[in-house]
Length: 484
Image 1 (cartoon, rainbow, N blue to C red):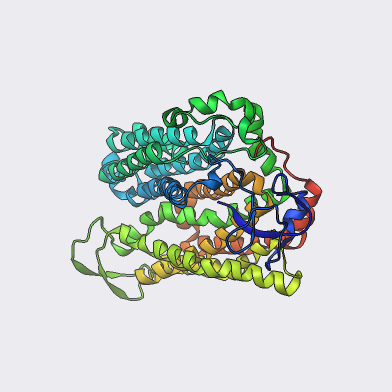
Image 2: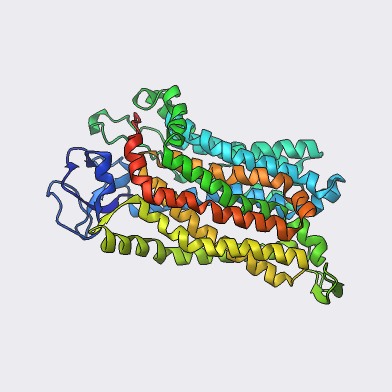
């Protein structure tokens, strides 16, 4: 979809693009009348990028087609994290099934996490060469097969192999939870085949030189894109796109910041079942029995009801929804206020980072409180609240940081998003290996306190981006990709 923008005078009317990278940064927030030859929205804002006159241009597709494809993409992107969380919630039954410790079984989830990060980077590179739709379709086909493999695995070695492969191909443990993952993946696979279309369109080519769209089936399996590959990137160019992006100073600094901020989310998600099972005597199902249990500190007894471990995972879900709801108004309001008050109604990507300063108190306090809850056996509702505080802050942070990088390098939206995603799961991949042993050696209060300190400390990198981000981007230059 086009974005409603009103540009400063330096605008290329032929291509519908700013003439330089610097002009992208200086976008007027208040409406003004644009050049008459440029296409505008119904309320008069100039559309960027400019739609062509070709009905095959995705920007000219109907509202219904655009939003149906968006829905399918969103539903499919839900699967990797859902599959990873499925393995985390079922750690205890897996340990019983495989006759291994929870920490050993967790290695399958850790491998899955690592491949989610690596898979995203390879996905955008392959899409730049083979086409977006066939990569989307074939990766989902393989994710479906590996999800079924997970559900029917007869040994831990087979299960772990399937989990790792599923993590790689789902970027785009045993029993019924993984059959649910298989069913959901299968539904997404069929909706991709029947409803999604190739979204790549090079607006620099005149309409008569665009590759013809003859057969939907051939586009889904990738034959049409293969025939027109000479119009896109070479294989080497496609593989180097992610490398060029991560070498940009602002993207690399964002990667490091998010690595030390989001890692704890993944670490908590993948190991919390190990902590809370013995702490609160949580079982796998609601069995309706109550008992008295002493807290680890020995201070007093608590009345606990055996609940499903999975119920506690509603806390981050609710927090994520609240973070999204708050972000609808917060992000653009902060940016607009920043532009009006400090920059003469002009927008700079660094304005997107301001919300991180508002979100950091939630993330830090949430981590500290989780540590105290697990150390002293506070009521599980307080643990859920602490987890929610942290996730709420992370949701605000994630949107702000992602929007900053996407708007700093709009021509590399896929690559920047892939690196941001990779930073979160790679950090989680590392922390998940030693989260449990770290807490056992140092105590949850100490280990989560260190995590909170690191989360607060790396905000200094955000300060660097806020102050010097524009100059760093100007110094490093634009990305000169063959295609957007």
